[in-house]
Image 1: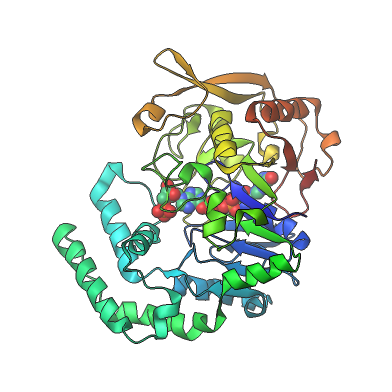
Image 2: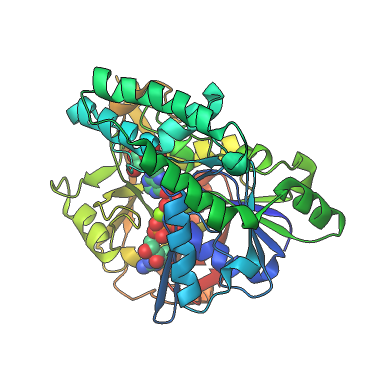
Length: 429
Ligand code: GDP
Ligand code: IMO
Ligand code: MG
C-alpha cells in the first residue's frame, strides 16, 4: 500500500473506521490528524463491535503503530475510558499508541460552553455532539488552549485561573448558565497528567523517521468534507478542517509524503445535526419519502457517538465532486451498498436546480444551499442480496449499473466497495 489519506467525503459516518481497520495491515502506522471525541468510528470483526472516538482504527492490529496528532483535541476522561475498554478486551493499547504532546485538551469549561451555546440557540442550534469541540479549537486559535505538554508545567494553575475567569464570566453573565468549578478542571488535568503524559511523544519526529525508513503511513480523518470549517456547509460544520490537507498540518508532515487520497462515501447520504441537506428523505421523525426510512432502518442510521437518528437521503454526486476537488481524492471507497438491496428504484443526484438554473457545484451560502433542489437520475433497484459480497463481478446487474453510474458522475474511480459492516465484507476493485 502507498501512503494514503483516508477521509470521509459526505457529512461523516461514511464507514471510515471499517475501511481504515481493514487497510491497516498494509500500513506500518495509522495516524489521526483532526477532530476528537465527536468522532465515532465503528469496527466490526465477527461478533465483536468496537467504537473508537480518539484512538486510530488500526489499534486492533498487532504490528501497527497508532498515533494521535497535534491537530486533534483530546478529552482525557473519554480517552482514558476508551483505552480501558480496549485493554479489558485484551488490546495492549499502551504498547501500540502514542499521542502528540501538542494535542489540545478538552476541559469541562469547553463542554459547558458548547452546551450553553446550543441551548441558547434553540431551534437554530448547530446540533453539535456536545463534546466541547468548538470551544477547544477556538481556544487553540485564541492562544489560550492547554496542551498535553502543559499539564505538569509551572504556570498551569495561573492559566487555568485566567481561563476560568473568562469562561465563567461568559457562562454566568452571557448565557445565564452554571459556572464550572475549578476542582473539576483540575481533576481532568490530573487524569491527563497521570494517564496520558507518559504516552506522549514527538509524533512529527516519529513520522519523519518512519517516512525516511520507507514505512507506510495511513492517515485517518474524522468527520467528512461537508463538515469542514472552510469547505463545508458553514456554519453547520465542525470546528476543524477535515479535508486531506488537514492531515499535513495535523501531524506535521510534508505533501511529498502522501501518495493517495481515499474518499469514503456511502452509496446514499446521511447527516447528524442541523444544516442544509438537499437529498434528505427522512429526518429521523418526519418522512419525506419511504425510501429514506428504509435506508435509515436497514442501515441502522443512529450516531455511533451520540445515538441520535441520522438524517437520510440519496447519494449526492454534487457533494462528492466538491469533496473530490478540495481533497484531490484519487479513489472512492463506497460503503453500505447492501442497504439499498430490495428497493424498487434507486436515485442519484447529479446536479441541483435553484431559481430555474442548473448548478453543478455547491453554493457557498447556506441559504442558497438550502434552496437547492436535487436533479435525480432514477435507476432500477435490485431484489437480490449484496450483503457480504467480496467479488464485484458477483453483483446483480442493476447494482453494477448503479455503481458504474455513481462512479461516472462522481469524477473519480471506485476502488473499494463495502457490502456489510464486517471487516470481511469488502470488494477490492
Ligand atoms: P465512521 O464514523 O465513518 O467510521 O462511520 P460510523 O462507524 O459512525 O458509521 C458507519 C456505520 O455503518 C457503522 O455502524 C458500521 O458498522 C456500518 N457499516 C460500515 N460499512 C458498512 C457496509 O458496507 N454495510 C453496512 N450494512 N454497514 C456498514
Ligand atoms: P465521524 O468521525 C457525523 C457533526 C455534528 C454537528 C457538527 C458539529 O464519526 O464521522 P461538533 O461536535 O463537531 O462541534 O459538531 O458536526 N459531527 C459529526 N457528524 N460524524 C462525525 O464524526 C461527526 N463529528 C461531528 O453532528 O452537526
Ligand atoms: Mg462516525
